[in-house]
Length: 151
Image (cartoon, rainbow, N blue to C red):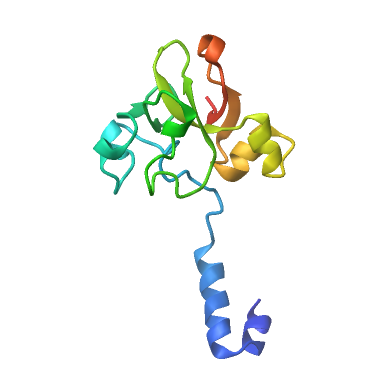
């Protein structure tokens, strides 16, 4: 590496040296829905909670919490400008036996294949977080396949 750096022009050598010294974090982290949280106020930074199509929620039934908000239909998810800057597909579904409908990062077959993946968990790990898996929301007849932390 040192030999290569001495052969590169000055500014390019500095950029390469800094990049290798700092390392990189290639693990994506959802910006809003799916982000880690302890309380609902940790969710949707920079967005007026009243502008969302439902009250913000921090689900504590998943490891490290999961930011979401209440919804009644898929269109309620990503309805506000800036809510979904990462562009990940979202669905409105019940989570386990809570009976509440919330927005989740989708790993349904159409979303997975349109992103060029054949494995739904690989999709979640590449697009959302390396600790996420694809699983059913477990909400009865309205089950959806979503990306959530493994655990």
